[in-house]
Length: 448
Image (cartoon, rainbow, N blue to C red; front, side):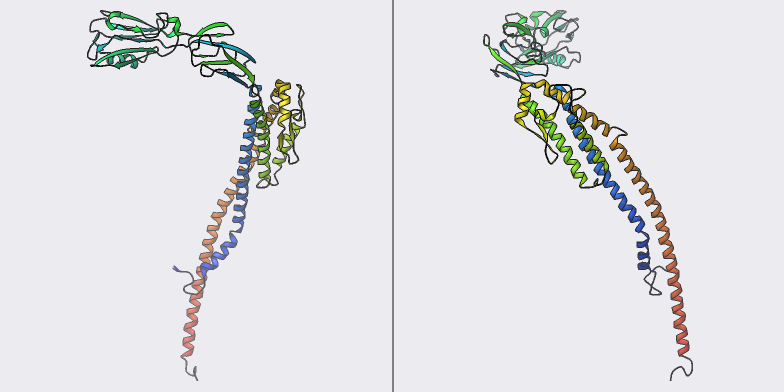
């Protein structure tokens, strides 16, 4: 068996086989190059899909008048009152007074030694009710005597705690107090105490700490809006002026604070600019892909035609029907630009009409762009059909390459076997030739 082909004959068997296999592999290499092209195109389609998804998200955000119904809310005294406005807020100005902040009901016990224990008799307990509903009550069993710290832990660790937290404040000489605090502000969350067994109110000496003179209704916040007085349990009030949230910071009784709700033109202009930016970003992505792997792909042309078709078909539902009427124009390079002055004039003239130009349910530009992009991206849509076709081609090429690899292995094995046999035959013939030459040389008269 020849273990080093060519040693016996001088033939470079491995080199010959390698050169032959290089020729045999050319069809395989052609398939590999084609696969790389398809994979590059598939990656490019992934980039296109990402660009379209980004464009669709931008259009989806603008395909609602809520994107344009943005208001600025201001207050003349933010130290006392802060405000925010939602899209449902009416334009206007209000005089608001913060007469009182909402408070959390707080109670403190008398001072006791940290070793004092409470209860210890059958039926001994303390019950804390939150608000007016008896169901919102936590009952602490003190049939076994407990210290203030143990009572604190029982309150805080109870999974059915209706909304009270307990703290122990340590004083001098080992003395301490139990502090109970309602977790929600306002009179509706005030605590009511009751006792069982041998315990009563004097056992703990719990007293309200809030400076309300025993009137729990004073735990509610009190404000007035244009002279109309209202109370609420929280310092965050969102149900007095429609769409406006008032955040009470500091009580300033008798002091008028002016609250103004205006349209936020800057935010609306940002929304319009976001529309133009999204359009330009998509065009930039298409341009880059056309200069790359999708150079001759008709998909990009189809997308561009779809975009231009919408731009060239004005809406018909409002005062403004063309983007150019509010300052959006297409430049020579195909990008969209925004003329700030024209846009601001349009917003001041008819804010709602600008919003409808983008977000009308039928003819809004953002609405139509979002719908068109959704068709391109949906399952079975334009992009999906292209990528599925490429996936199928790549899979077919991989199968063909696998089959070709197996065939090449067989061809290489055959070449090695054939040339090894040739190597052996040539080696034998060379041996025979050497023998005959030596025999002839030894015959009489062979040398003169």
